[in-house]
Amino acid sequence: MKTNFLKVLALTLVFALSSLSGFSQEKKTEKNKEVKTVCFKTNLHCNSCVNKVKENIPYEKGVKGLDVDLEDNTITIEYKTDKTSEEELAKAIIKLGYEAKKTDIPKNDTKKKE
Image (cartoon, rainbow, N blue to C red; front, side, top):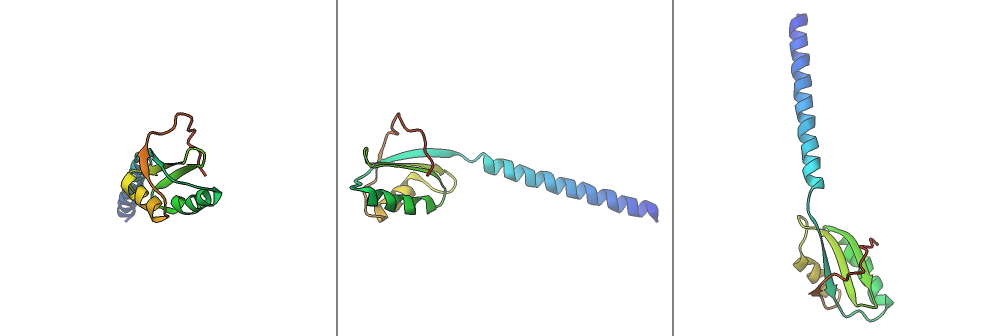
């Protein structure tokens, strides 16, 4: 009787450990998803425009970071490639009423997250 109990206990532990290791691997692959940065030249006019972008774009799927520069008229977005694309982000900016022309990321960009 004790032998059967020990066998069941051992099998339960093996199953539990194998389940946990599978869960751990899923977490690792999720952390390894690629994050890219894209910059759009736009037609921001004032601080109200900047605020409109800051209040909406961070809620787009996959957005990790955002920098809106009124002086350079640029919107720089850090995003998860498995969640969204440059095209989807451009559509979101256009939906707010602004241009979204892809451009090079400014060299002085420090990837501010706001």
